[in-house]
Length: 66
Image 1 (tube, rainbow, N blue to C red):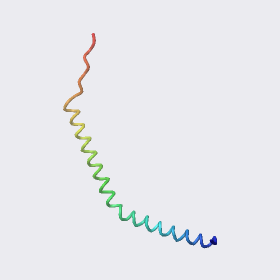
Image 2 (image 1 turned 45 degrees about the horizontal axis):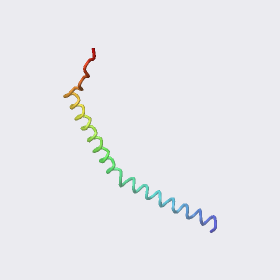
Image 3 (image 1 turned 180 degrees about the vertical axis):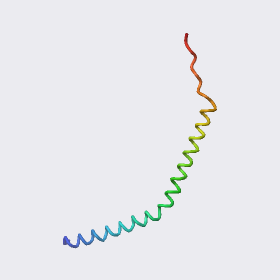
Image 4 (image 1 turned 180 degrees about the horizontal axis):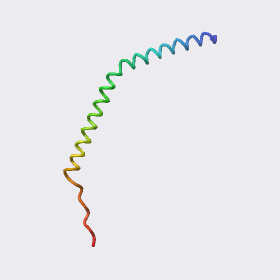
């Protein structure tokens, strides 16, 4: 294979990969934002629930040894 042919094929494949990456970024961006927002919301409410449980039932204190 001639070096110029290899270079031409490399540029063509690089252009294809760049186009695929751009398409993937455009397609996944709104979906990933929604997914990230959903994870943040679930994590936030889980932390609120944990905080309420801790505030409702304080941890038991060990008995003092005299």
